[in-house]
Image (cartoon, rainbow, N blue to C red; front, side, top):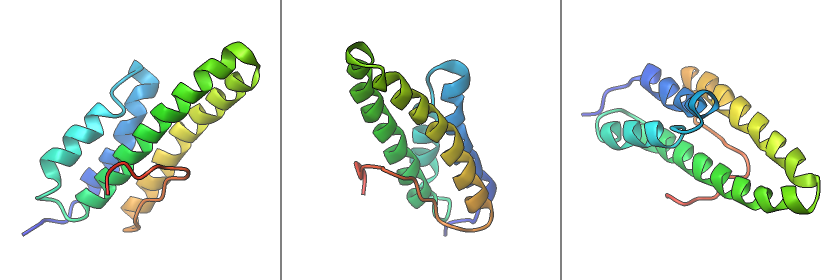
Length: 113
């Protein structure tokens, strides 16, 4: 039987912010949390997949923006926009999760269903 643990789900969303502090880990930490708790915590599978898909999408978008930095100034603007999205949406979804809502990340590819 799965246990309900909203605090762990909130931490899973907020763990993405590690990237802003260390430069990496925003994918690794939630991935570890998801794989170790998806069978024991209620809704961890849904939240974990949302976080992993969002992080992978951010990586893809960043890789697309890097060449644009060299060709035009648009790449810098898009990277700054991605940084804001990477900061704001984990916090929004952590608050939603603490209220019992499901996460919604914008412009996310479904790598994991």
